[in-house]
Length: 287
Image (cartoon, rainbow, N blue to C red; front, side):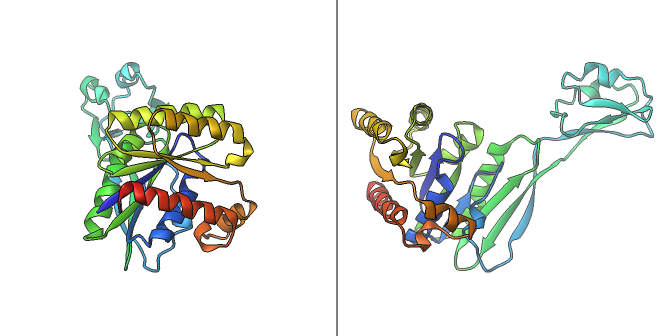
């Protein structure tokens, strides 16, 4: 199975819009949303079946047994994350503040604190003639990279002999992006024609280089600043980075997305440009 990952340096550049269109163009049998902090690919890739749910457990968190607690406050005094508070004359753990370091369990004289599994998110797998894996991390939870790896693994296992998988990645260069990039055949970076867009692009390219992943670049809403779009294209040419094309600003895009449609489903200039970028990307991947 070939895996194509769609990335961007920040949110809102058109990464998910591009991924959804590529899924339609390719008739991909497998796809995944690895932006587990804010998944939205499911809004434009509806499947007919009900999903299978799986609870995701992140790092263990502390819990205080009030029947054993002496209210001595030693745990609160050593918690560097200020996650232990007094409430109604007893101590309790703030689930959003606890980082799972377990120091409190070591200093408690009554052994009233224990570490336990924390339900940190939910993974969903849709499976009919196509396979779609997505997940959502609970607010304030860490280990998003680990959850991304699970999403990819579940998709790959369920998809079987699928020819191509399209993966919607996370924005930026953090842990979920690194987990998304690992093991893919190619990453298409969607950027914007601005100084910050070029800066974000350079950071992503450096990350991909470290992880030794093949990349290509396209510029969304290039007509907002054609000069900067040309600068980005020139940068790619100078550095031997494949340039897949440019995408225009199109008012029909927001109407399609609000209606739960992919741009590939409507007739507009953006659809034609996306098809050109898709064809170029597929030729680079040699699919």
